[in-house]
Length: 312
Image (cartoon, rainbow, N blue to C red; front, side, top):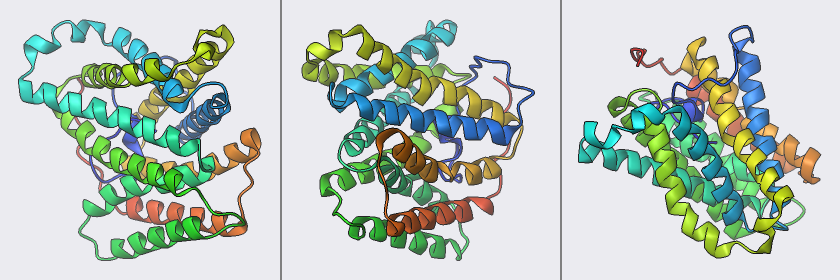
């Protein structure tokens, strides 16, 4: 999870903003880039959850955000030198709000991961971008997608062999709300900042907001080089790598197709949770996840692509 585009895609372009490219990816088919990006994000989430026995989720998310801020800040360093001089207070406030939404979104979903299965948390979180996609549409049939997604979440909350932690569900819902705000704020930031400067500034603000919480909750484990290295890997897998893959995919395919493919993310999260964490979901929970995936894909599929922005 992480970057967003204009309202209309269901979680799709919500991590692909900026102009940074780490690898030469032009020869890789766009669907493969999307799949690799999804796997990268959810593998990072699985590794993060492995760390929760040794580090609080707030420390892990701080390391993730710090990694992303350092990389993005370095890539946008030239633009950041003049960002305060060249932009109005209102533009800077929007970028700051974007960063705070980013920080709270990541904090909330990691708190959710620590309480409920990975696939369930990501599925509930997807209600945020789904709400944005449906809210931006004037098609009556999108109401049916909303009902289907709601039914899926009710199945998740009430079904299964054991009850889900309500606090974990609440944190996933909060993460979804932050994701919705994040999408809208990304669109507003992208109109005011060129290249990746807005994203880099937001990442720095989000990291600064989380840093006191992370430092306050850090224990002796934060000094363990092995754990810090894993935390760095989480930051790369969850942010830097998927940003680059998704950006390249968006350059070569319509945003609505991107959004439909990104709807696979809850299923991939559930599979990663099963493979890395031993989180076996019930048949009812898989049906619920499929309901949200179909709703998200359906809401995105008929959306018109926004006009292409000029190159920064």
